[in-house]
Picture 1 (cartoon, rainbow, N blue to C red):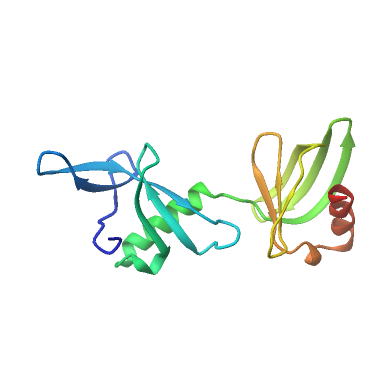
Picture 2 (spheres, rainbow, N blue to C red):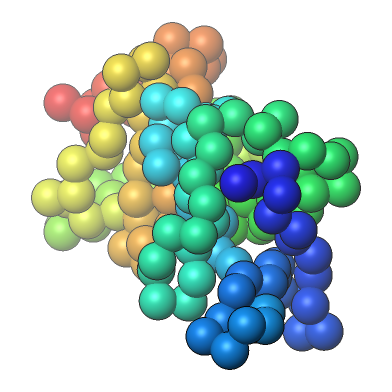
Length: 160
């Protein structure tokens, strides 16, 4: 189905496609793109869903979409939805009663954010770490062992 599915941006800028309706015609629906396994399979297992969350199409790999333009639209949508700053350096990690205050450098610039003391970071099977702040934003450390020694020390203090 993915190769025959025509995906485009509609007048409001959302991804859309046309599917059969009950009257022998086609109706436009907006699509929402979701990675089923964003951490363990970042380049595959993509679900296209309607507004109600019903799956319209599923692909194991982006190249299952027949044309380059469709792949580019899906990739753009995923990048927009999955903005995930990568922490490159931890400048400070301060203990403040029920919160930790992080001062970091990311691939998207310097950031300051707070995490709850009881919020446990997610350690990924491939070795990365996901940290969720009090606003629900996530930060990614793909290879904690490659951080500088001071950053590693601060991170391990937090993880223990």
